[in-house]
Length: 342
Ligand code: F6P
View 1 (tube, rainbow, N blue to C red):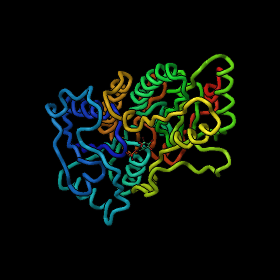
View 2 (cartoon, helix red, strand yellow; view 1 turned 120 degrees about the horizontal axis):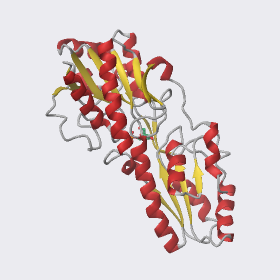
View 3 (tube, rainbow, N blue to C red; view 1 turned 30 degrees about the vertical axis):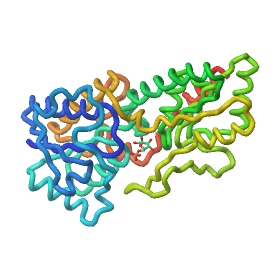
View 4 (cartoon, protein in one colour; view 1 turned 180 degrees about the vertical axis):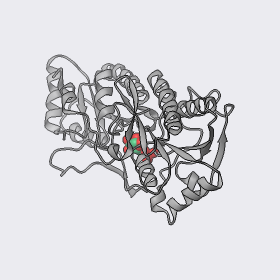
């Protein structure tokens, strides 16, 4: 049996560990694995590379993806789905494992409707894919954010500044909330709750009354200010193949508004791609290993159009159609963490 695998969308630490698991567990069950390069561009343009035990040796701890990634959408390309099917046919590939975020899962599901035997593995630092407790990469990004906040604390305290850390999180504030809690941010701003500059100002002033001479604000790139009609701050208006604009700049927006009133300096750090690169955290290495093996189990059982999912301690399959098109914000029950110590 021959299985194809690809990695699409924004990368995150733990993808290589997943590839390693797919190949190693596959080999145990006589499953040969073929990699498609550059996300969905691989099967569209027949960019293939065999993935052997030797190819995946020594990559458990390496971030990124040895297959490369892209935000290519076969449903945006003339004859895209047919090309994917043809590439699978000429390479004698029976089924396909797609590792990626909601866009990649969406393409996988649509291809399943075209008869492709496909399995998804949820991977995004944003942790915004429905029907799984965690997506691959989230905990690694959280580590980078926590480390950044630890570093910002020491310099903020030395210089008596307000330091703002902008993190990713387009529609869901998992990174900002959990990073903010882990790193002890004083103000936590998420896409789930519009922010108000006056109340950020008041929070910082309250700290000053307590003789705290610095403050740390963490803000998700997708957070929006009250009164601006829910418009996100956009870095690049051009849309990608899935219709997303590149977000960025909300930290600077807040800094500009605060600077007018604060008598201490306000500075911004955008963690950007530093939170997406680097080594996977142990949790992600384990999740990757379990997701990869589970995907091979699903292939062997002939269970397709599903995604691997973590439910408590268990890895289970969920229908791709059930996981798609649903927002996955931080649930109401966790939002108390935003102002726990206010
Ligand atoms: O993969 C999701 C994400 O991490 C978003 O939070 C962010 O908006 C996006 O990737 C940016 O990725 P890129 O610049 O690679 O398109």
